[in-house]
Image 1 (cartoon, rainbow, N blue to C red):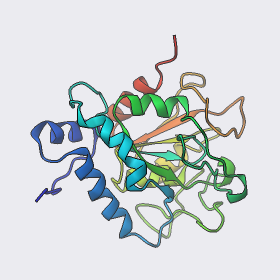
Image 2: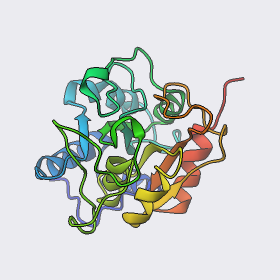
Image 3: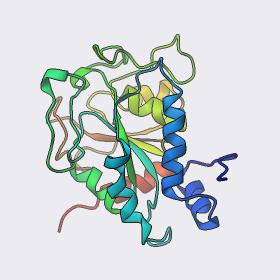
Length: 236
């Protein structure tokens, strides 16, 4: 039976687990889904991918090696104002919802590197807010990972809390006026806002096009740097 005791969900930690044969990416995803299902009072997710939706990403890894893909089998979450192909983008507004044909550029870069998109995370509606309480029904506000009586911070509330709870290795958010850095601070994780223009905003629902940046949440600065370097590989 696969054991997930002493699981190190950082990028380097998971790479070492995979090299040691401790478990497969599919094993890890199944384990994480069980953890998510135990939480019913904190609406971190707007949409979790089901097994059928995850299968293409897992099949892609079956003939690959952890040493060939820099993000082999690394689970990540996506703020739900950033497109993931064939999965609804809502920006926390049910009436706004649409299904994109293609993933955002940065998301596709990470998938190509072997990362597994686990789901879309909750946010202050249309990424406008800094406290994390502006997500309406049917979801509602995300609770802080450290103290549920404290605000989670916004607007990238779900992305920050998913990382803080060690449910994913990293996540994508957005930062226009603090929406990445504020929830990172309040949940005691790393929040990287790259210089505007270094990460493509193609496939991101705009809050303010002249200021929007894709942000990165992680448990370590090394992980944030790794994700940034992969996501920032622009087209020739």
